[in-house]
Image (spheres, rainbow, N blue to C red):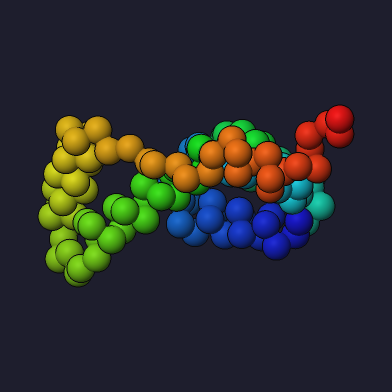
Length: 128
């Protein structure tokens, strides 16, 4: 909990020090809670940090985070796999890559079927 809280403090006070609000998309790990800030810092400091965060949790049993990770991996490998000299050039590359992905309507082909789930997650199914 304290490691996460210190990471959040560093992110807010160093990387995004000028931002009034930072939106975080996070998984549902039990340490990823604003209460962790109060475990690590004095109440006024914890509140100062908490007020700058807007948390969006991913679904507990969904694949939303997996899809985001897959897309970021594709983006990194196809667009950001080389040195880009300027921020303007990078923004142009990212926009072109994004337009291409959207125009092609790129999809994720999941290989985990219902049959696979019944085997892997059989402890969740009722015994007959």
